[in-house]
Length: 226
Image 1 (cartoon, rainbow, N blue to C red):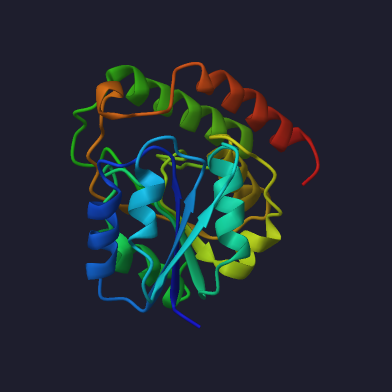
Image 2: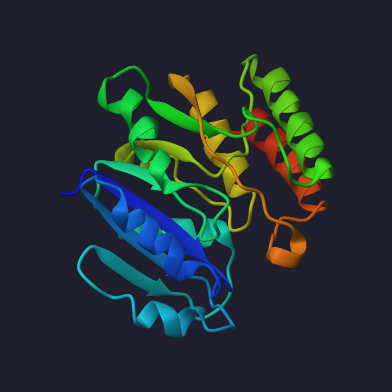
């Protein structure tokens, strides 16, 4: 059983997929890389077929089903002690993995968030403001003091991820994960990470209207069961 399972949902990332996989492979941690191609319509699938080698598992969806669905496929096929979710672009740096898993290995935390924006922010201002608002709302609803609840880097033991019984198919997955971690009063630690935001012209997929879906999902999770 590897120490770390890296679950990477992929959709139309032909420009970055080889480089991000290469960076992940260079990190000196016992790991497996689980790539889920969510029915890409560019050359991503072709590139992934050439990446099949020891330590890499590749799965493909026949129909585009969303990030949440891809993560669930990854979880079903993971075997690591700890799981981290990795975006397929180059916004997040896998070389942060050792710092992210350290609090779990030392039993200081049950759940780790890799927080962005600690070294300034050079991306889209509207996205930064949206993240601030959504994080503020999360803190109000749960009485916590987190600083970046919608970061991609969410890390916990595999059995904890599986216990969440995730349902979201789209980007609401991020909200579902952190909400369920808070409802279960898990010990959460935030670890600063490197962050290199990209623009829409570079392939950024989260749009402003996604925030409204997140808010609705947040309220349902807070006052519903699960």
